[in-house]
Length: 160
Ligand code: ADP
Image (cartoon, rainbow, N blue to C red):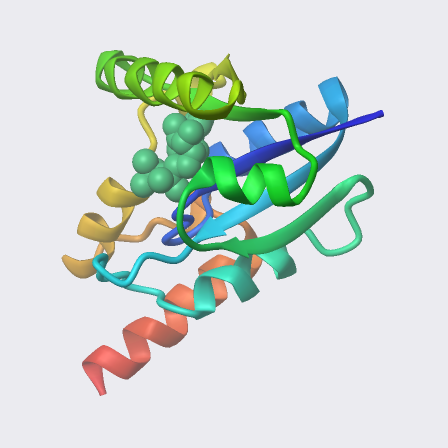
């Protein structure tokens, strides 16, 4: 059994993320989901993101969740992890991931595995989900049930 890191912003976690995490677990045996924390970024769900990821994956064997700050390669070295796994959706993902993969390999030899997104999630991103949410659209079918509840609470708090 090997551990692979599955990093991301998860703002919020979607069924697309869940699919990659579960397939990564089946391939490697153990997945550490790394929830990025970057002071330069403004997250809609802020510190709640990691709680939502933990809740969505509660009871799932072979999956752990930790926050990540700073360089991915430093986090991996500190945790004895030699590969990361990323979901690949469309062309823009590939261009970005290829650059990141080579940079990480150049820095410490960290390997990257790119897993094609499931057909049903190939166009789903947290970014588009947040945009639709903000305009009042119902995105429940794209997220785990606990995230749908958090979105309902967010809606309550913004509409008063
Ligand atoms: P997003 O790009 O949706 O805002 P993140 O920064 O949280 O998401 O992405 C973390 C990882 O999850 C990336 O490797 C990204 O490609 C992957 N990912 C995000 N959405 C999906 C999806 N619908 N299907 C497969 N992989 C996805």
